[in-house]
Length: 377
Image (cartoon, rainbow, N blue to C red; front, side):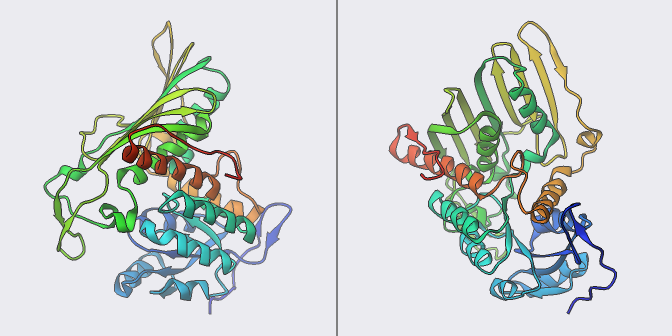
């Protein structure tokens, strides 16, 4: 049993609690160590009290590293622990849906990695159940917490580029082709649903929607390079059957047109992850990651490129967006709601998943696919 000694009151000015919020991280692997665990531990009003991973030895190593007192190998035991207020889900995509729903029904607030689910139907049910349970629900769209994208959105909405004409997003990488590349769950449809489309595309579809508005239709294509790689855990030869490249044309509800491209088989360049919004008066260009490196530039149609000032931490080379994202989840629980201007809920996760599904369907049917955008769709 955890001691309550030395714990301080927490919460907003209008609402406080006698103890810190207690979190469990389900799927305590590499990214949990990079993001969820340290991000939560940096918040004065949160503590990570439990980790869950099927491999007990590895889970215990992580718990020792971060000073986490409880270790589980079955998430059902985590959800049965009434001392835990909230969970973060950092598992292969196929497990997001069942774990999130069971966690919500067990009375936990839920933070889930992206993509939210294996398909839009699952994602929508996750949102509906979260709302019915009255719990805080957030999805890990990290780009929203970068300074460059937040500032780009402000400038875009304030009319900096005039009438919007075109939006383009792109992400290049070729880790999939490197001779040292191994296979993991992200490379298997049965565990991930999609490949680079869900992994990076979910971020970019959310960024497009957050900045420009709802995506109403897409026409896309997916490409896989057939190959076999040794599995990272077992060494067994494993066929790669997920997409290595995803490209699409899309249209926004306003009529704005756009271009989408994410890849793990094209060579990266400087500023290789970016969003560019072109208007009659000029263009805004943001290059981003998890906050390690980011920047924002503006060019008037008759002028030269100018750099837009961002807070100093944007140039520190540290993934500041990750900690900010986790802190906002804690703050959302404390105030009883997310910051609707910035924090992505399961509804936003469903909208991104709908665009992902549309690209898959468009590839299969070789045509434009329309996307429903109402809360009742």
